Every structure is written in C-alpha cells, then in structure tokens.
Amino acid sequence: MSARLTELDPSSSREPLLSVRDLRMTFRGGVRAVDGVDFDLAPGETLGLVGESGCGKSTTGRMVVRLLEPTGGRLLFGGRDLTRLSQRDLLPIRRDLSMIFQDPFSSLNPRQTVHQIVSGPRDLLTREQVGDLLERVGLSAQHAGRFPHQFSGGQAQRIGIARALASGPRLVVCDEPVSALDVSIQAQIVNLLADLQADLGLAYLFIAHDLSVVRHMCARVAVMYLGRIVEIGAREQIYGTPAHPYTRALLSAVPVPDPDVEATRERIVLRGDPPSPKAPPPGCSFHPRCHLAQDICRTSRPELRGVNGRQVACHLA
Amino acid sequence: MILQVSDLSVSFGGVQVVDGLSFSVERGRTLGIVGESGSGKSVSSLAVMGLHRTASVSGSVLFDGEELVGAPAERLRRLRGNRMAMIFQDPLSSLHPFYTVGEQIAEAYRLHRRTSRREARARAVEMLAEVGIPSPRERAGEHPHRFSGGMRQRVMIAMALACEPDLLIADEPTTALDVTVQAQILELIKRIQAERGLAVIMITHDLGVVARVADDVLVMYGGRSVEESPVRPLFKLPRHPYTRGLLASIPGSGRDAEGDGDGGRLRAIPGQPPSPPAFPPGCRFHPRCPLATDVCTSERPLLLGEERRVACHLEGATR
Image 1 (cartoon, rainbow over the protein chains, first blue to last red):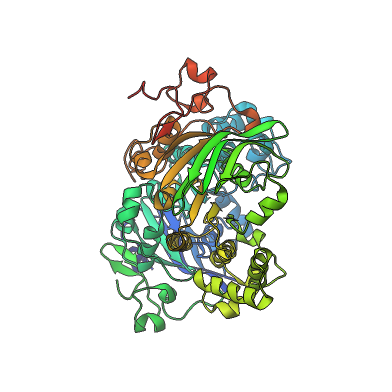
Image 2: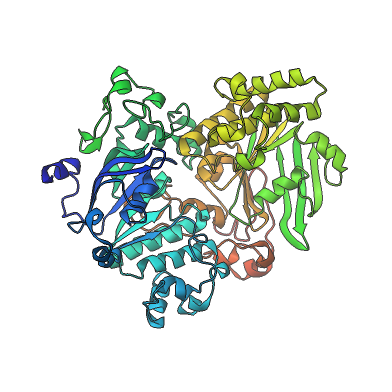
C-alpha cells in the first residue's frame, strides 16, 4: 500500500490529509461515473481537478465529502477509512469536511436567514460567531438577518463560503466555485479563497473547468477523462509540458485573452464529443478522439505511470 | 456596411437598459460585444432583431440600408431567419422536442423560400452536413434529445444559416459547452463566415473568445458602450479603466499583479456590476473605478475618438 502511495504521487512528500484509492461510483444502469481514481491531498494544499462535463470530477468531490456513497475504493482521511466508518463514528469527521457549490442561489435555502444558513440545521453558532464568519468572508455581521435573494451572486457565494467554514473544516471541496459569477467578481472570490487558505490552513479540492483559474489556484492538478485521471502532477508540468494528448488538446482549446497568441498558436481541435460513461470505449477511453491513437490504444487500457515527474495514463507518453 | 446601429436605446417600463449604443458591422467581419450581466449586451442584440416585444426602442438600426426601428412586424418577420439569424446559449430550449431536427430546419427554410417539402428536406440534410454532423441523412430524422449539447448547437447553426443570411448574431453560443466542443463550434462559425462573407456579432462575457474570433470589440458596461476598438489594440493597450480592470482580473492574463500561477492575488475590480434600475449617475463605472474624480460622479462621459473610442473623463488626462 505505502509503496503504491509514493509511487502514485511522488510530489506529495507530506503526510497526506486525504488519500483516495481506487475510488469508484457506478450509478444505476451501469454508468461508471468514477472508475478507479487515486490521489493524495496534503494539509493546506490545493489540488485542482479538471475535465469536461461527465468526466466524474464533481462526483469525485461529492464522494469525498460523503454526499455520495462510493460503490468502491477507499477514502483515507487523517489515516482513517471513511468508507468503513459507521454513521456515528463518521459524525466528528464530517466537521472536517465541507463543500462550496457552483450556484450560490440554488445551494442556499431561500426561506432561511443568513444566520440560519451559516449556523446550520442544529443552530450550533452564536450570533457573534456567525458575525465573525460573515466578516471573514467580506460581508458584515448585519447581513445575518437577511435572506439570500437580497444579495448579489458574488455576495451569495460568500454566504456559501461562510457556511462551509462554520464547522471548522480542514478540507473544503470547491465545486466550480466561481464559474456562475461575473468575470469581475470571479477574481474577488478567488482572492478570498486564497486568503482563507493562508489564514486557516485549509486543504482544497478545487474542481473547475476553467483552466486559467485552476492554474492560478492549484499547485497540483489532476486531469480527468471519462471517470479516470489521465494525468496528475505539479502545475508547471501539467501546463508547461502536458504529456497526455487529452491534456494538450484541452489546454489548446481554451481561448486566451490575447489576439496575437490566438492568431498564431497551434490548436488541437478534437473530433466528436466526450463519449458516454454508459458505454466507455475499450482500451484507452480517449482513443476515439485522439489524433495519435494506435492499435494498442484500442485494445489495452493504459494505467497511470511516472513520466518526467508526473503521472500519465497513455501508452505513447 | 450590412448593419449600422446609431444611438440605440431600449427601455422596459421606463427603466432604460440600453443607452445610446452605436456600432456597425461589415460583411465578412466579426464584432465582439463584451459585457457582464446587466450590461445590456443581449438586450441590444434582441432589439436589433426586433425581438424586444414589450420594450420601447429608439434610435436607428439600418440593415442593408433599410430602417428596422419602427418597421412593421411583418417586415421584421420576413428578415429574421432569412437575411439575419440568431443563435443562443441554450440550443435545447430553442429546439422543439416533438419534431425531428430535419423537420425543424426544413420548416424554417420553407418559411422564407417557396420550395417543396422534398427540396426543403434535402436542404436540411445539406445544412447538417455543412455544419459537420456525421451521417446527416439519418440524423435529420432524429429528435433534439438524441443530440449532445455541441451537436444541438450545430443544428441551431444549420437552421440559422439555411437561408443564407447576411448577418448572424451569436449570443453566448458556446457558454454552455465544454472547451473542446467550444473550440469546434468557434472554428465552424469562422469557417462558414469565411466561405460566405457573413457578418457576425459575437456576444460573450469571455474575453478569450473575443480574442479568438473578433475583428472589432465593443465593451459594454451599465447599458452603455465604454470602449470600442479593433481587437489587437484593445488587448494590447486597453484604455477604459473597466476594460483594463476586466483584463487584469483574468488569471494568467499576464496583467495580474503578482504574475501568473504563483497563487498570488488577482487584481479584482471591487464591488459588482450595476443593474438597470440602479444605474449610478455620471460615469456608470465610477463607484468601482480606482481613478474616479468628482466629474465622473456627475457627468456622463462621451464616447470620443476615431478608430478607437473611449468613454472616460480621464482619457487623455492619464496618458
């Protein structure tokens, strides 16, 4: 086990806060949304999880905070296997895990005041504590009596962040925390998340499709395709010298706000759409869209292996 | 000039959401209209198309020399979908779930062309092939739910272009799509534009998309145009403080304070974009502007300049 751990994640030298091993989620109807995912997350670290819709990144995040029960694999948090704990033993650990959602409005109960939202169903916090949290996220203690519809999108997301901090978590799963916000507001929330991490030593699992935000936020990045991690490594490796053809295509597809770069750079335009996780292709699941695919890619599934300091699942890397 | 818009204003029930907008688009060129929520970017394009319903519209919209503001509804219906077409963010809500995509494209075509059903049907298949849908003859017989998001947007483009319009307005056409699919759709629009000399208005919040497709850019804030420029100079040297702030707030733009990817702080614009009933007086950006002075709080800045136009009191003073 420990050998595999270091082999899988050489860049993470600290004792991990979270170790995910062979995590799986098969929904009814045989949809393999997550199909054997491994990664480590150290205390205070940010790991970016990127990929397109249906790749399983949100499902992975939901399993980590136990909003979804995995159908296979293990989640080791602080050395304890969360998938084997009883609900009672899980309760104290749940305080260590929380989540920030994409849509600030649909994730806040419109009939609750900000105090009720932040304080949670058992109203565990005093007025002062809620006030402190609100100020910490850039709102004011006076906002506690208001309702979500009285706030803008950026402010509502701040309420969602205050709620996520209420239990004093060590790990926060951020599921597309800025993608529903206006461009000028996104930077405010990104800065807030960075400040909170520096102050509170939070570890983030940062799920996003916006690769430039991930590059800014995350020292390590994992790229998912059809339920599996196809490449994981340090930010400089993933963005500087991407090894998986999918990572390269993804990076080249993102429009850059610079017309000169856009006019000159090489772009890999993938054919077709991501395939359905209901019927994943045999072999490497990326092969039908891969411009480099060879015979071996159609028959044998590549495992993650070390290539130039990162892990990549590609026969040709 | 296929489209020339002058001093366009739109209001709903006395609330003005677009205030004195002027722009033009030529055949074969793409105008990018950038803005955040409440900027009026979508409303102004709907007004150009005559799709504003309850709004009151003033100013002038000249399409190929013909005035559209105040034109009879019947005349606008003849132009829409025929000589000017529009695609939206969410293709599924623009397609009818009951009919096959082939029937829908054929019907849109027959609305404007006197042809037989058979001919219209053939045209639908031809268009599906042109937008890159594999086995178009078979796919034409399928219903929209059988298509992925990217394929549905291709269907919308096929429908929009079936009558060979002169102008295509694309309102956030790739916002709901994955980046690799977005890249395909943007390539498709560019290719068809080059082949047909189509004029395109690309409405988006994404400055990366603008940098990729636009020839000219119009930046909207609070219902007004704050900066207009050819694409390269705009990105090289943005002049309006809002445009500068917007570009600087993008991670990795190279304009953020502490460089790229070091986890440093981004240069955020404080506050939030205003919404129409509460547009501030003077320059509408002044409550968020780091450079605002007294004049900015009371007087509306005029959009000045030739090739590049900027609406800022400090323009000229700061450089």
